[in-house]
Amino acid sequence: MKIFRLEVPQWEQFDGLIHGFLGRFDGRSRPANGPFRLSCDNADDPQAVKRNWCELKQALGLPRITIITAKQLHGDTILKISHANDKQAGVGDGLMTNVPDLCVGVVAADCVPLLFVEPARKIAAAVHAGWRGTAAGIAPRAVTLMRETYGVDPAALHVAMGPSIGPCCYEVGPEVEAQIGANWSKELTHAWKPDGAKGRLDLRALNEAQLLGAGVPRPQIQKIGPCTACNVDTYFSYRTEGRNGHQLSFIGWRS
Ligand SMILES: [Zn+2]
Image 1 (cartoon, protein in one colour):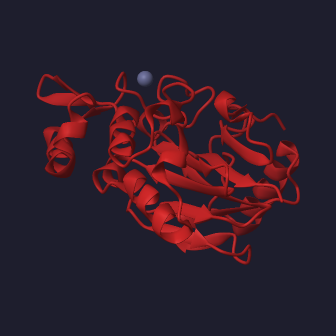
Image 2: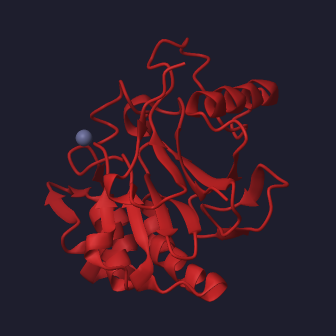
Image 3: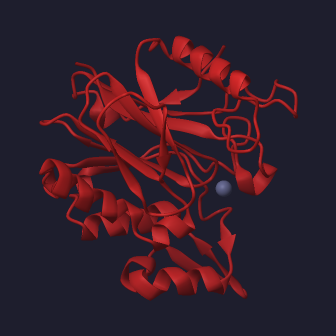
């Protein structure tokens, strides 16, 4: 099994950190009705999903690391993970943890996967931000919750955004601009370009602006990988393909 995995070059210095932004598995060779799925949210066979997880962790060389995900609903709920009991932690679009040998993960197919790390205290978080989650401010919410829960200084946080749909392909209507602009008009300035009756949204630029506002230093915010919709050989893209599959992004620390 071939796995396409991006890591953040700036994070090589963090000893014991495990992370990755994954691409699609086995390229497009799987049959159209059987893509490599990691969630049971769309009536997938639970046994097949379980096998996929096993196969994935073997291929990553992480057979004994638990990767915990949640049922994502494009909201702003962030779950605190304190033990490895349940592989699907509940309903939420973000997960944070300070437990070693446990990774938190989100899946996405165009939406922005964000990984957060505080290297001194070995805290990690993963967040899924589509336009709805971004409008709800889920990334700055993660910064706030990591401060309240673990005492993390926002200035000590490093954040990376993975492959997601770029402004080249992300045309949205004025209703989206209005909903985001209701709370984030300043942040939207450099992330929105009018294009006829619609506009082009740069979700990663918008999340970066929100993170800067939350106190994360600019040099500690990275954007990794290309536009998913331009690169469907490597990444699932909901815009391009519809409901076909998701790529996983995950992060955690070894003990
Ligand atoms: Zn594109």
